[in-house]
Image (cartoon, rainbow, N blue to C red; front, side, top):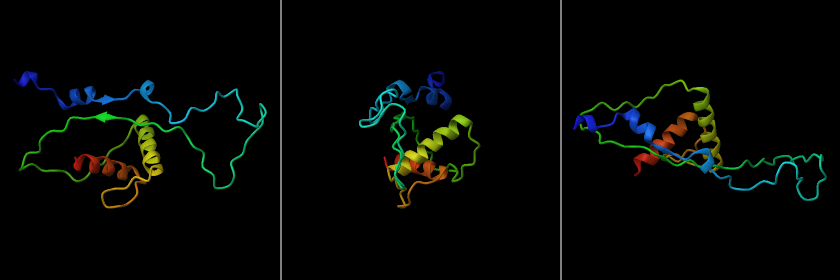
Length: 128
C-alpha cells in the first residue's frame, strides 16, 4: 500500500495549471500593423495624465492536493524564502492582478505585497 502513495513532489508535478496556450486575453487587441481607428500608420498616441494602460488579463486555475492535518502536529506560521527569477515574475504578476481586481485579505486589507499574495491564497484555501 505504501508503494501506491505519491510523494508531495509527485502530486505537485501532477497539479493542473492552465498552459499559456489555454490562457486567453480578456480583449483582442488589433494586429500591431493596423493602427487604431482615426490614427495613421506610424502616428504616436499618448495617454492622458492619470490614465492607466490596460494590459490583457489572464487567469490561472491551479489544482493542488490538500491533506488532513494531525491534531498534535506543529504548524509553522512563518515563511521565509528566496524566489527564482521566474517565480519572482509570477509573484509580481499575482500582485498586480490581485491589486487591480481590488482583492482583499480576510482581515479586509488590500493585497499589495508578496506576503499578502501568500496570505490571500491561504485565505482562499482556508475558507473552503
